[in-house]
Each structure stands twice: as C-alpha cells, then as structure tokens.
Length: 390
Image (cartoon, rainbow, N blue to C red):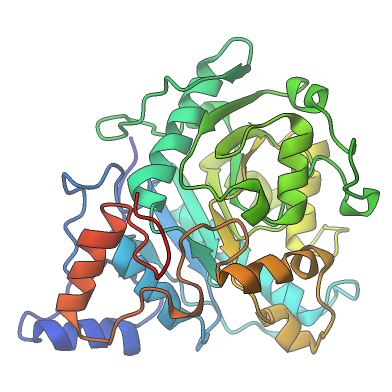
C-alpha cells in the first residue's frame, strides 16, 4: 500500500497570508512540504498530491535560486513534495573521481541522498525531481492519470504492445496507480529524449521506423495536452513521426536510449540496486549519474519505461552543474530546442507551463493563488494570451 510521508504543521497563530510568504521565502528544506491551503485529494483533482507515488523528493542544493519558481508551480498544481537537506559534502565525498566533474559529482550525490531517504521511509515508490524542471498545468488533472492508466494496462498486457484509448484513468482507490511495483523498476517521466538511438546518429528521414516501436513493449494513447508536432522539440517530433505515432499522442514504452534524469520514479528494489550497485560512486566507471542510469536500463537488467514525450523538462538556462564547472557549452539537445522554446515562450515539449513566471503570483496573495488553482490547474485551462481554452 502506498503511504504518505509525514506533513509538517505550522503554528496556528500565523496569519494565512504570512504563512504563504513563510513557506515560499523562508521554507526550511528537508521537511515535507504541503501546498498552502491545499485540498489534497479533492473531488476536482483526479490524482493525489504525489501524482500517485508514495512520495516525491526534489534534488536541490542549498540556496538554489530555482526554488521559488518551483514552489509556486507546486502550489498552483497542488503537489506535495520533500526537499531533503543535502549533507555538506566532504573532501572524501568529492575526491577519488577524476573522470567526474565537481558539479556532476555533487548532483550525483544529491540523487543518491534522496534515494537513500526513500529507502529509509515506508513508501513503496518515489518520484525524484530535479529542481529546475517545468511541467504542464494539467500534470495532475490529466497527464498523470493517463500515464498511470497506461502503465497499469501495458504491464497487465500479455503482448506488452498495444494501442488503446480504454484505460482506467481513475487512480483514486487503486492500490498501485502505476502497476504492481514488482513488475517495474524505473519510470522516466522527465528526460531530454528517448530517441531510440544516440543523438549523433542524426534525425534525417528514416532514422527510426514503425518497426522500431513495434519491437518493444509499449502503449500509445491520445493526450490533448501535448503540442502538435511543429511545436514539439524537433528531435522529439521527428522520432514520433518516424515511429508512426499520430500527433497529440503520448507513448509509454520500454526505455531504449533515455537521456537525462529530470524526473523519474523508482521502486524500492530499484532504489536499492542504484544505491548499492548500479550508481554506487565507489565502484562506478561512469562519468555522470544519468549515464549510469541509462546503462543500468540498457545493459544491467533494470526494467525501465519512458513516457514519451516527457511530462517534465528542465527550464532553459545554465544548469547548476554548468555553473559549478564554469561550462559555457550548450548541449546539442538544448541547442536544437532553442528556437521553438523562444518562439513559444514555453519549455521544450511542455504546452502550458510555468516558464518565465507563467502563472506567477505575489507571495501571500491567497486570492490569486486560489484563482489559479481553481481556474487553471484544476480545470486544465491555459489562461495565457492568445491560447485556446480546453
């Protein structure tokens, strides 16, 4: 049974407006955060505040400038997560890894710390987020129920390969919304592409074919929250078109060549293998955490699934790793998305997100916050200039 983490309580003497400002501006990391004034599990929302997982952890270094925007987005979509306090990494933690840059190493340690805390909890599944992710305002009202239903369906399918629109999209009362944790290990919900091959191979016509998708376990389903092909990341659009996937259709498939670890769900068994074996820094030969995960999925028997296109994507801009290591190089995946991101003012593969303060509100403005919850997130309405309403 999925269990919820302990929720902190605040002094009742705090005024409601002050409480919002306190949580956003003076939030103490490492404690479970509950959305301000949240009506968790309310009738208007179709998944719970942890998106159907036992808990959500956010990997975030102390004083990260990304937290304010992250907390505002979580407040509006009423997500419940924990930001663990990361230990002060010692020289022993950081030495002895000459192939791993300092920024990459600190990010790696942050992920392992969250996984260890998950293992020390009584939750059966956990979603791990990086703190620079963006998501759609419909993540809870539409996307998570669809993906959960897809996972349950494909895991119960004997063939493991199907197209369906008849999925159980009501997660309330389902013991394991994403299927029995004994049947899967890791679910990529946020990544920078599962293109079925290394990006250096190119994306010309024919780089993938429908047979490539037919050869692996998968399920496809309509998702009206997806942008059309011309507004997706060019490599994502090319991949989906080459696989024969219609527009406004999302896949859940066995991972092939997943890049980046913006958001991924794990079971207890998978977390234990990652901490003790597959991503153990004492024995690893890999240069980055996401590479270790990719290899674990591809070659080490980890049963990984990808949501494609992804539900979470990192916001544009220099990452914490780039800042620590003073890297000015833009990864090719980000470079290819720059034009469409700037044109749409939306994060890659996100149709209606929180980039550049989309749907931001003044700290302490409960009236504005409740309006955004009610009219935007719960109803799935993209109230941005020039945007159609669902």
